[in-house]
Amino acid sequence: MRIIAELPHPDCKISIFSMNQKFIIKFEQGSLEQSYKIAETDVVGGVNGVFELLDEPFIVSVLAQFTAMRSSFFDAFSRYD
Image: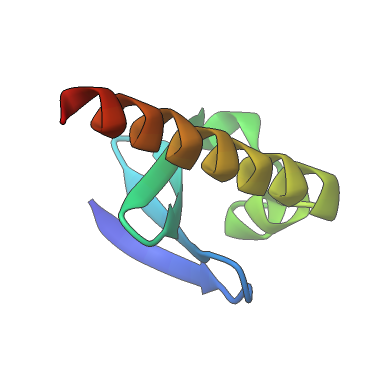
């Protein structure tokens, strides 16, 4: 797996990787991460097509998922004590 691009964003780290004819889009926020895989053949324009896929509504949705993930983890951790 090799990193082919990073997209600057103030609320999370966004990295794009290439592996086995797939793009892997990884979002990181603190200790949490989300990844999405898409076949290179499904994206027109290579990595530039991936940038187009990562529009603001999608990123807002990803950030909302981080909030839900963090809440779920904290809830589980509080039950663990």
